[in-house]
Length: 114
Length: 112
Image (cartoon, rainbow over all chains, first blue to last red; front, side, top):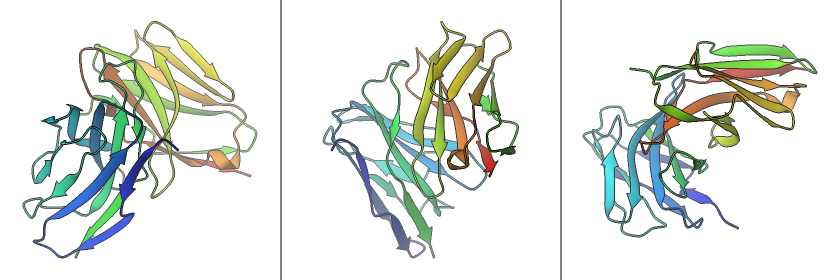
C-alpha cells in the first residue's frame, strides 16, 4: 500500500534532549514537508524539501533540523533549542512543488517533553 | 501574518441540514485552494480542491465555491452526517511558491 508513515505515534522525552521524528513515504513524491499543530492553531510549516539533499526553512524553523538523504525519507530533529517542543507533528508529501499538486499527510506524531 | 483565515472556530449543524464552512485569504497570488478534514490525533485527509480558473467544484456531498474578487471560499456539505464531525482546514498555494498556507480550522459538530 502506498502512503506516508510516521513513527512513533506518541513520543516522550525529557527536557534538554534532542529527539528525531521519522517520516517515510513510498508514493515516489518529490516534495516533503514538516508541520506543527498546536491546540486552536492551524498547521505551521517547519521545513520543506523539494529534492534530495535540499531543504528550506518554513515559518517556524528555529530549534529544528532536517535531512533529506533519500527521496522517501525526511526525518525531523527537535533540538533542545526549541523552547516549546510539545506539539503534534505532521509530515506531508506531494508529487511536485507546483501548486496544482495536492499535499497528503501522514498520521502524525504527538511529542511530549517532560 | 495570517494569509488564510477561518474566522469561525466552531459550527454546529443538525443532521441532514447544510453545513457551510468559510475561509478568507489575503494573498492575491493564491491560485489553488484545498479543504482538509481532520480527526483528533490523526493527520488531515484531503477532501476537495479548486483552481482559481473555476468558481465551483463538486464531489458528492461536498462543494467548494470560490469568489476571487472577495478572496473568499466556502465548503458546503449537503446533507450533513454525524461522521462529518471533525475539524476542517482550508489551505492555499500560489503557483510561484512551494508551500501551502493553512487556516486555523473550524470544528464542525453534526448533531444526530
